[in-house]
Length: 376
Image (cartoon, rainbow, N blue to C red; front, top):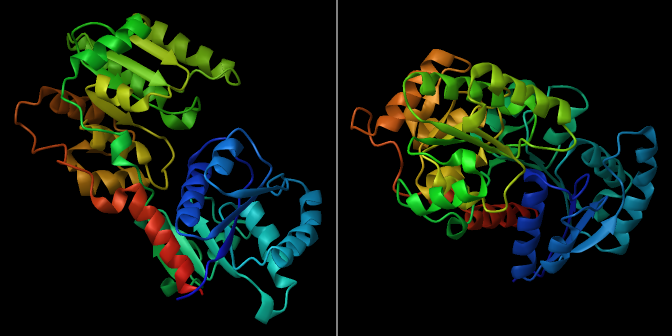
């Protein structure tokens, strides 16, 4: 039986986001399987969680956008040799370049294998192309796989592995629809979320790309229908983005819906937020690589309404076709929201009974470790 592997993951930092979450999840799987998990990054608030998972961390600022970052090639190369690294797994472009150069300086018979994960739909460029150089290139969706093959045609398709991001279903348990207790608890914390009408939820950080303005316009249209609809946008209130927050608040006042909108910081109890709502929105203005929100919401048993592009459109077409709306068509968005909220049988069953196993955290972890095994 093959012995344990030493796998080194490269990423800019351990602050927050899908790249960071996947790094922790794969590290935990490696340790549980008896392998050694190393991570190189600038550190951050998720570092304690990484160490608690049994991984080891080496602090190198390999994601800082500066020519000086290339000076870290030699320290990283030394680390590869000293730690007996078997596989280097790069998850971001600049760390991938540093890792690639570190590997090129080693003899071929002593060189760790190179894996990359394409987590995003980055603009095609020579800089981005490094993510297609892995001996195995993990794509987080079929959308990403198509993006890689379209823009980097020299990439051999047999090196690509589609491994969707996954969730732990136990963290997103099915909830009754409506869940009056969850809604009441949300209204206690934020009174604007009270009332008898439907609650819309748009989770996402405070950036224009997440489509908060589209959600506000949709709420105004639903309230003009005579519904006491409310909108919760956890994550949109960010102290680093005060100008954007002021823009959203001004737009809500202009539309006459300010009393029906809660713009809050991120919530740690996101599953409870899903349970409290009647409809989850995914309105990113830029196509996303995957769309974890769709999987989380469906696991809880909530319909999703989103723009039909990128990884979100891919997931909706597979799991809940009635939720996919032509991108940026506000009238179609309004009409589909009305239909999804009606629940009168006019649409086919909109929420799958469960999330397919391939979108589970365990499936993602097992598939990633299988990629490592391919390169032994």
